[in-house]
Length: 378
Ligand code: T4K
Image (cartoon, rainbow, N blue to C red; front, side, top):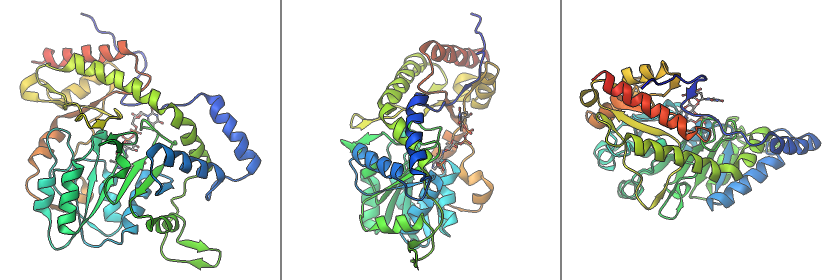
């Protein structure tokens, strides 16, 4: 069978853009109000819409997910070691290090690649102050077990939920787990505000803290309460978020269809492993489509498949390779154990294109190419 390369590049994701008239209609209000940033009316409307969507009253919007993570940790007044995963985007560890905290890397579990609660427990020392777990690819962490570990050892539990907006577990939004959850609304996410971040926190007393931290520590014109930064979301970002939000169910449904085709086509392909579906108590958002490629089983390793796809104009990504422990800022960081699962997954992981605008025949063509690559080289 002759498989044609795609005419245009197929990227790992594509931002959803609402009908331009919907965004333009909102711009009129921003022009009329002449209020562009610093806690404007559109931001307030966006926050209220998110309160409804997440059924959560303790929210703080930020300019991006990285600064949101940084102030999430800062607001908890942590000191010492933070146990986290090496299998994540570098912003997770940077947020801890930027706060003067020492990341300690523990292993992940093999099914959905989230921080392994048993590995966390082993990594705890008298210097440990918190667990920073990641709902990687939108896969919910083992929240009950992590909560038990955190409670038993008196640790704060923070979730980097950058990938997980729209995910639900045990009948509620994933925003309700841990002390603080931090979402990214970056353009590459199923839900976005161009750039953006959101903190959802259990303690309502943190609301003032976070609002000050994101706004230079300002309390009033004449009072600065403490250290702060500029992490404010502007009105144009808020308007994008507000305009995209009603479209999210449709976006996730389209992604679910893509995921369904991948699962049907790729299950059972020699050398290719799909993570199992999420447990029945979870609602996914299909933010990413990870697969593992086992060089031994396929005769073609992950990197050859990644390069081979490019020849067909398909730009998969190797999220999250290399492990953070192999990245310059963390090469000398503390590692708990040998990280066998994380090391294996990082060698095998490939995230395939998935987005709302990927037509079924395109997904089939990507599967054709992948199968060809995996069998040709065998
Ligand atoms: N924690 C975790 C676990 C995270 O994954 C992230 C971010 C954060 C924290 C921090 O959140 P933010 O501060 O970003 O809000 C991308 C994103 O920039 C980043 O948000 C995301 N995680 C990370 C996993 O992926 P890159 O460097 O891989 O992005 P880039 O520019 O290569 O984009 C990926 C593909 O998306 C491109 O090949 C094409 C497509 N694309 C991208 C953009 C920006 C478009 O088609 N249109 C676009 O506008 O980091």
